[in-house]
Each structure stands twice: as C-alpha cells, then as structure tokens.
Image 1: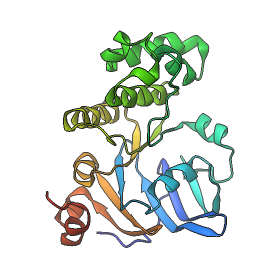
Image 2: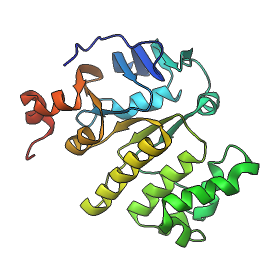
Image 3: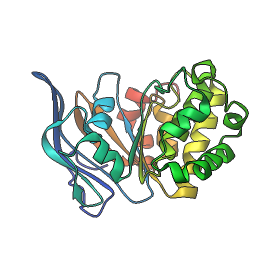
Image 4: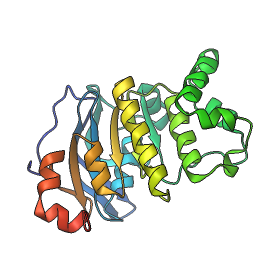
Length: 245
C-alpha cells in the first residue's frame, strides 16, 4: 500500500495535491492527495463524518478549497466557479439523489442536458441503458422507487457527457438486489463509455471489488491507499471497514 502523501501525476484526469477545506473555523480536509487515472474506477472509503462527501463537493467548487490544488486533465480548476467545473466534464451524483421530485423523469433528464439540440438522442441513450426510466418517463421523480431515483440521478449526470463521474453513496438505502444492479450499471458505464469514476460508498467491500484502487479517509486525512487487492487483504482495513465479510 502507498504512503498517504504519494503525489499524483499531472497527466491524470484528476490530480489532487495537499488539499484542505474549511467550514468556517472547522477544518474538514487536511492535506489530501488523491488521483484518478484515465478510465479508472477509484473508491474512497471511510467512516461517517470522515470527509468523503466534502471532498467530492470541494472538487466541484462548493465549498472552496482553503489550500492545495485540484487539476483536471492538467488544468488547475481549484478556483473555478462550479458551472465552469461542470462544463469541463465533471459530474456529481450527490448523496440522496437530489432529483427534482415534482418534475417528470423526462424533465429531470432534460435538466442535465448541455445542449437542447442533442438532448433527444442523449435521452434515448439513457433510456436504452435504463429501460425502466423509459416506462416511467412521464412519472414524477418523487414517485419513483429508491433504485429508480438513483438510476435517474446517474442518467441525469450522464446527460452532460462527463469525463469524470463523482458518485456519492449510490447504494444508500437500497435493497441488496437493487444495490447489485446499481453497481453493475457503474461498471458498465466505466467499461463501455471509458468514463473515469471516483466512488464514495458505504459498502466498502463492494466498492473495493468494483474499483481498481482505493483511498482510506479518516478525520479528513488520507491514511492509506492501495490497489483493490492490497486493501482487501489488509487486516487493518478488514477490521475497520469489512466486518462480517
């Protein structure tokens, strides 16, 4: 496994160096170094309150980094406004889905489109990937099941043609069968579209099985990182995050 302070390479789609973030006077992230290689799935695991969601949101510019830098395909995006970061090709599927409950499935997807001209073809692609959304296309988002809402949230993010997809707790609140379905979709998106993915996931075992590499965050600090095989074999990781596996 790697040291917590292994520096990312500039050629990587996502390269974070010495990143710190504050909420007022409270420091949430402390000198985080993290990277995602081209077409790679990387997972970030840690206990509740470790700072995982804060890291994803900081990548998107809200909250702002207090220090350090975030590079996307070699460009420093640390101080760009959120809409410009999204425009560069980063999409966040936040914890809790946050779909528009009163809008239809179709309207939710249209909200994610970067171009009205291309929206029809993009929506057709999303429906091909998620057939249940085609069936529910005129149904309000708030009436969908948890799994269907997660599919809608992922579909809306894909409407922007991201090169990096940030997923925050995609299996939260889902039954085991639906959780497996969502993980299969994530793998399919990565393999078929070549989209790099940074995955925050409560189920550390399934997240590590899905990812190529992982980082462990504790109290706002990266405490270790390594390949999927290294982290799954680590006794300390198994005791802390893989109990019962």
